[in-house]
Length: 102
View 1 (cartoon, rainbow, N blue to C red):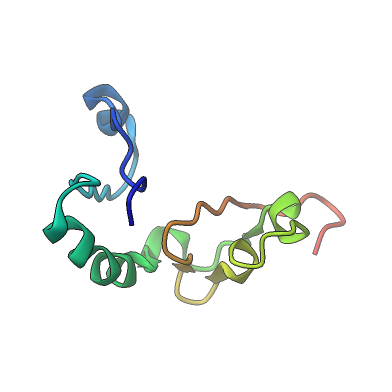
View 2 (cartoon, rainbow, N blue to C red):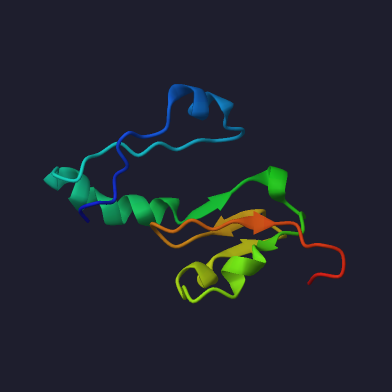
């Protein structure tokens, strides 16, 4: 999928400042091997689970929840397991609901 790799990627400082597990995917748009591996990588990273999020009350950000993007709206969070499911090549923001929210 040409155009999917960001150049330049995150800096070392940005990576070091990230809390929790970090997955870096290395590749380039012109590499046939990178492009061939992209679907398998996307599938493997589509679901992320962290016990630190277990029993947290999180929801998809309200702006994304009502957006016209049907792909991002399929992003989910399972409270009981702390599992996030986000479609490949999608950025989803999960937030704690405001008082009076869902």
